Amino acid sequence: MAQRPYIVGNWKMHGTRAMVAEARAIDRAAERLIKVEVALAPPATLIQAIRKEASLIGVGAQDCHTAEGGAHTGDISAAMVKDAGAGFVIVGHSERRANHGETDADVRAKAQAALAVSINVIVCVGETEGQRDAGQAEAVVASQLDASLPRGEHVLERVTVAYEPVWAIGTGRTPTTEDVAAMHRAIRAKLLEIYGEGAEAVRILYGGSVKADNAAALLAADEVGGALVGGASLTAESFVGIVVAAAERLEHHH
Ligand code: 13P
Image 1 (cartoon, rainbow, N blue to C red):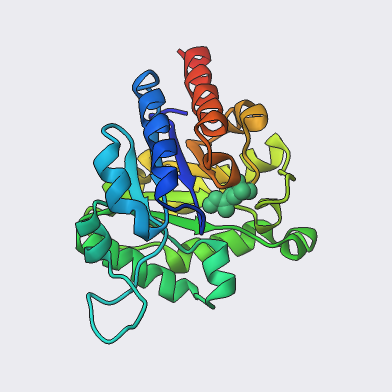
Image 2 (cartoon, rainbow, N blue to C red; image 1 turned 30 degrees about the vertical axis):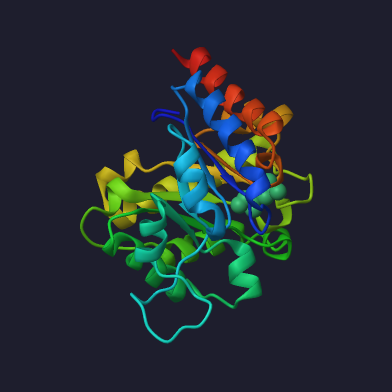
């Protein structure tokens, strides 16, 4: 991990105001682990409350619409999540690709919308189990990257990639460290092809059943710059364990 490790909690559709206390506890713990960049993506309804309560951690959204505004009932624009206090937005999560039929082109348009209002973006990619079994994992991810990643000015300062194999999400199953490393090297190569040399600085997160007890091994894999954490990010107790693993990984490296 050449760059500062980045540990992001994706709360998905979990959390009411009662959980703001959990975010506050995560923020307090992050103060003791400043070598790690920590962030939470709560439901949009909690962005403002958590931004107000947390001083150190990043706060982001889980999705945004492609348009600046308009007749899109129920949707939220990038400018709106920014206004609520979001510093970044996750786009292209496999749950959105699957449940809302989001295509690579949609994901890219959302990423461009985030960049247009000067917030950061985490672009998610990952293969299904069937695709991995068919030996297509790297090809699938490469084509997702080609078609989902935003282009243009300031992209490299603002973009993070999250590799989340769909079959590892919420299942307790993870790829081997070797498989994670191989995929992350392939993603790095693709980023260099798309963006040129500056892409060396883009962080590539691993996501899918990351817990405190497997984080050290996953974070040790080649080209893994952090983690995107679902279930284990819902309590300070489990999430901070992952942040500690990232901090310790750093100690071993320097
Ligand atoms: P889990 O950590 O619950 O497997 O979820 C991963 C994920 O989808 C994060 O975006």
